[in-house]
Image (tube, rainbow, N blue to C red; front, top):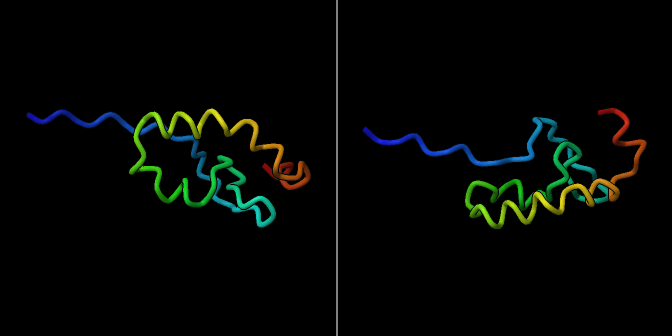
Length: 68
């Protein structure tokens, strides 16, 4: 029997709206290229991006985030 692979960690909350000013997803704060390549990144690369996400929130104007 083959083992089921462990699920990939992701910050995705299924709110996929890109902020035109910052270029970040307003749901998870990732850049589009990060979203597109997420499944090909290794755990260390994903962890590094996830560590940067809280600081990225400030790059999106608060009034835009108020709708979430």
